[in-house]
Amino acid sequence: MKAIRIHEQGGVEVLQIEDLPIPEIESDEVLIRVETAALNHLDLWVRRGIPGVPLPIIMGSEAAGEVIRVGERAHNRFGYKIGDEVINIPIHSCGHCPACLAGQENLCPEFKIPGESMNGVQADYIAVPAAYVYRKPESLSWSEAAAFPLASMTAYHMLVQKAQVKPEHTVLVYGASSGVGSSAVQIAKAFGATVITTVGGAEKVRQAEQLGADYVIRYDQQAVGKVVKELTRGQGVDIVIEHPGQATWKESLRALKIGGKLVTCGATTGPKVEIDLRALFIKHQQIIGSTMGTRKDIIELVNLIERRKFKPIIAREFMFEEVAKAHEFLEKGQAFGKVVLVNK
Ligand SMILES: [Zn+2]
Image 1 (cartoon, rainbow, N blue to C red):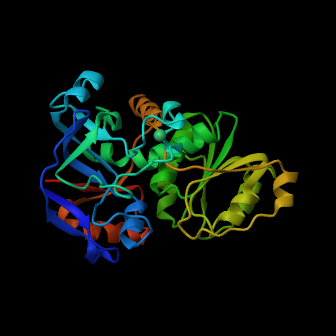
Image 2 (cartoon, rainbow, N blue to C red):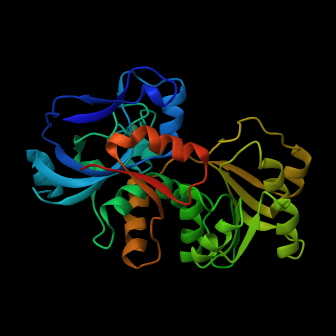
């Protein structure tokens, strides 16, 4: 079978399409024939050189496809059968520590992400434990199905589990065109909140409005914190969904209300930021870290998808063989939504 694998970290030239054996499955696993696999910024970091990546590694965290083989326990315990259309839940945890038993898999000390700390899903066939498989929502195309798990579970976890978003809240979501941003705008709206979001470039304003954003700020032209203050009559927002990091941090804090929560899951523009502790405690604000999500988040997201409250946004599709081009496209930052690899 073919698989997209790297043996060393570097430019797009390290992405190899290789011929590997079809994986054997364990009793608790299913074998999935991959139809589509989506890219994330994580793919770029893994390729370029974040530490801790076991090499060689099959790339990619999320995929959709058809079940073609089922282990005995995967069938008996989870009911999977040949022909089921499924997605993989892009997490892996020990399954027996207190965090796992409480359904908080992303707090597990052995938490892993496919395509980052273990072999990923950009291959013709993948063996996945049935516990990390979920049915593909019928209303979604193969590309849409592969495109939502990672970014959307991250956004859902931040908004719902960490910030406890409510209809009376105003939420600032950075980067409506990103996977996390386009998900967070829709999820916050689904929970009835008022949403302010940011985009770079005039052509993205309308796309952000179509997602349901109430206000769209051009971050390439305006100081985000200042505009947020004007829009909220000097109050600021209840929740900030942060992922750019260094470049936006100051404006994020400026935009946050007294008693507000800033939830961060990323540092795309750099990891070092400044905090004035006096401002933080005087304003009773909370800064909350969050990464990835849980099985429960995926189940609740699929619920939103089925109620037509949420839809993954696809920027562009590439063939598996065009993975280098797909990385370059994502790297340029021009995309609105997700980049998907199609396996033909
Ligand atoms: Zn665990």
